[in-house]
Image (cartoon, rainbow, N blue to C red; front, side, top):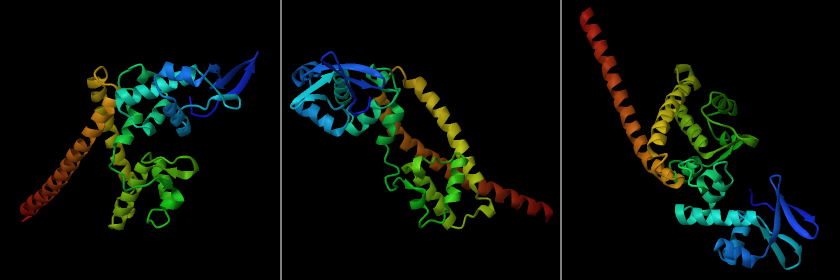
Length: 265
């Protein structure tokens, strides 16, 4: 249920609102809402202003009516704040997600996918933007960005918008190009696609292990924090292992080359 006001319906002197095809009776005053939720009216009004709780029905001036959905919504917000220590911006995303019911019922780690992005700070230097904005001063063209999307490396949203993490990927790809790594020399989108396939395979394996280990032990908030803490460490390990392998492969190649030259001599 979004924070938008439902369609107002009046039936035999009573007021109702229609949300997502469900008709909800609106016959509760603020005092009763406070009692049923354990939340003060000042806080409830703040939630309404922030758009995470729907507007009440107002059949008359100075009369505001609330319904069962308001009670459920406010209790959910209170639960997520007190039990999972989540900020309102993150709670908004959670309550608008398909996983909201499972999370509020304590349904394991489902919902971690909505919590995790807000706990990661690895791409704070990047900013979500459109393709036009991204290519304004870049060596990467709009056509190449669309080819990256077609290859599954990034995603392009509505109105050609690209989210923060994908903007960061494109910017690093542009840096590689600026440092002389050209498609004609083998550093093409197909090469980047190789990275994408390898990391996707690795991520699937990691998630399988994580879910089996923690599905019954953590809730979504705890799981998201554990992933956020571990992901930075794992990425550092991967970076070190990748660098180590590159060095060792260079050593192997030139060692083999030296052996071949010795054999010829």
